[in-house]
Length: 215
Image 1 (cartoon, helix red, strand yellow):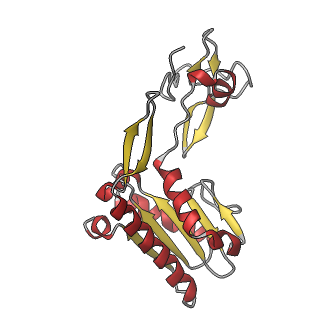
Image 2 (tube, rainbow, N blue to C red):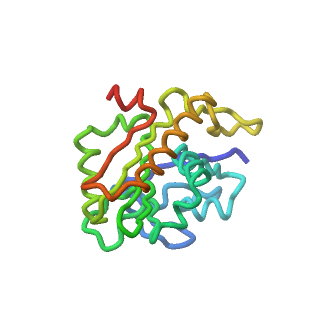
């Protein structure tokens, strides 16, 4: 059977629930309501992505996002950060907070926090004011001083897209020097931040610096 991508069918108008798990017609995805059953089984029944992938794995392409690769590399380099953290928040609102804004990944320590944001395409679809406001709301919910690392995987060809033999596309290291320089700087920024007394407010570090300085 031909593979079906996640964009296969969007039934936002007149959406129905999943035929298998009876999910509701809509679900909140990144702050927006979207149709839950956006895909079709070979029989034509509406299905959510989870049910389609479970029942017809040959029709589902499970794509790893650039964000996941960047976060995984940082965790590989800083395994002790997770051990020090009292709480790890990954792509969900801060528990007990007032906003639904979600950090890509946030480590809450005893007296401070470290937040990682992967700015794919430099978040060109967001204005600086919108992004700054989002970060401020998240920091207010955490209620601690913190460090926000904003990493752009598209600057300096840190990552590149390649086509596999089976026709799928994936992301891998692009320019090795740029990749290592970015994560060396990110690692150093976290270590410096944690070895200093807690700062007042939130410190934002954007990498690579060529992208951040040119914003």
